[in-house]
Image 1: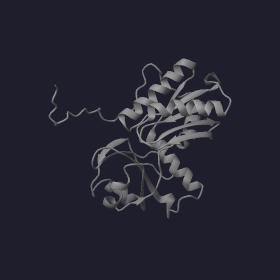
Image 2: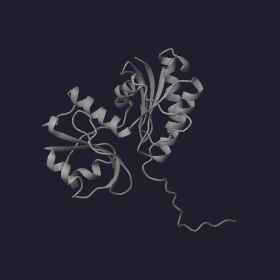
Image 3: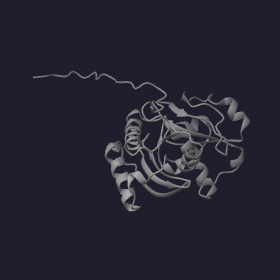
Image 4: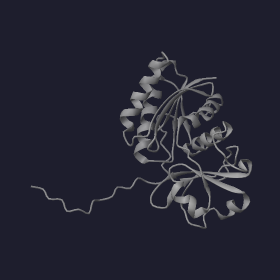
Length: 236
């Protein structure tokens, strides 16, 4: 049983929450874009003040480890590592795709979603990369991973074997919209949130599954690519 601060900044969503004994008790989120560096610190401060807590009263800090935006992941992980180191509390890393899937499962359990044959469906969270590429991983309807995390260029032939084995493939996340028609799949509106980290973080805390604050790095999946502008720059 623990009080855990959870941080997810791997996409356009900046999400910060307090989790107690596996249940989300306070939440701050913004989808206004790439201002995570400012918002994550503000959200953490607001949550702690709202709950009359000092950082030292936390039992652990959990952070979405990716895959996702290079810059967004750097911001969230850097903040989480700094807070963990400063307070001496353990750091927990949670797969962003597993957390996204947990949000979908939670919404289905709450009756928010209307999906036929959910128990026989393949859950496929997708985080947008470039063009027709996504970061993805396959899960069954209970949230058990049935494939490794990968970067996939999606075509009509993608995931052919899995699509034969399941009655329905359900896509969600920032990369789902561009892939649903190509794959002939069902798309649901699920966005990244620390809601999906709550139970996973509690489970990892209970089992002592922590990462080394000094050496932990986000799961970028691909190297960061810097492009050079083709415009002619004139200096006077």
